[in-house]
Image 1 (cartoon, rainbow, N blue to C red):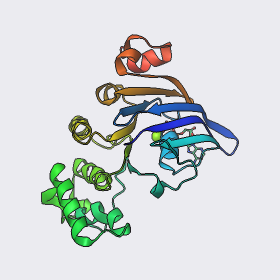
Image 2: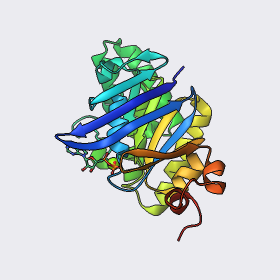
Image 3: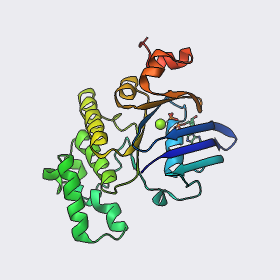
Image 4: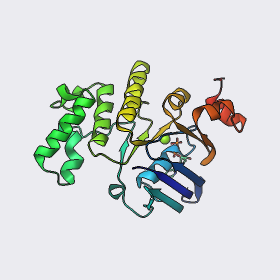
Length: 238
Ligand code: ADP
Ligand code: MG
């Protein structure tokens, strides 16, 4: 279970409107990509869904439940950031288990859950290492592992590949696709990269200046863009 709906969502910072009347329906199990140029409001929208930013008006629902007023912890989501955001003084295992520890899960259960997830992500040999002893790709996998152990209804990704080199980007992108195939968890994935959007997205939402220009399956947007802006993002690269 993990549908996400946004109704008439608006957001302004001080007097500046950055999100305008956004409506979105993301189905349970869907992989939805939010794409748009820098400053188009992708991160703000994702942070609104996560509960890290308040809306100025409008509502956010997860699994049909209005969560607009709820704190991030109460939303059954887990977020993967572009900067990994690992705790430098904690081992891989401690990083992955931290949220479960805070939630009061017994130690042995945490250890088992962390081991299972580490196995899935091929991180098992690295469990005792500190983040500084990991490569960028490994850090990003730990960051994903930390989200997976919590077993959320929705994964939120904010440009998770942008700090990786080109080769690793392709590899981790494939791992994210495999993970979605395997777990089927509803995912909302922010990127400004057309190839990432087209390879990962079951639904693509094109944002421009805080508005949804078009939303639909990749092929529909590719073959039938509503305007030149959408075409320039998803059509033939210029
Ligand atoms: P994107 O992720 O697509 O690059 P953002 O969501 O980060 O875009 O930003 C959208 C707009 O909102 C930008 O104009 C940005 O400057 C503005 N913005 C984002 N966060 C804040 C903030 N905390 N305070 C003021 N303006 C912000
Ligand atoms: Mg951003």
